[in-house]
Length: 162
Image (cartoon, rainbow, N blue to C red; front, top):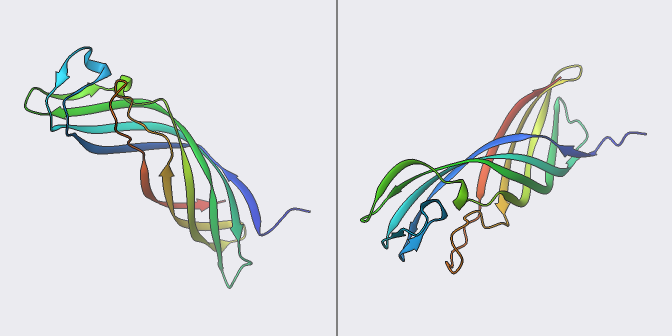
């Protein structure tokens, strides 16, 4: 007997993440050795992650042509590329390979909901919105620096099931 209203859901995602941080104190970056950057240095991070969500999907019975669902679980990922643009009073640099300043793993909570609309037979349109709340500090600044930066975002998923 196959369960109809709940399922284990997983996949493989290539995610593009980013954000801007302004470092209020002078700081060092692993990518720059012993160089010290002045206070108020801004770093525009651009990272790519290979991610695997592991979630439980709870679905309603079909209502007309629609099925609604909620989804929750964990999502783990690894950083595969990191670039940054740095601007500040002591230096300015663009497109820097910043992999030494971004931690390799990422993990967080994934929750969301959406619907599937039957098109014909087993073919259905899928739409959902998800929220990802990261647990892991993804910046890997030198020891002693007291910041914590996690990835948090909303994601819209659209697709067709065959």
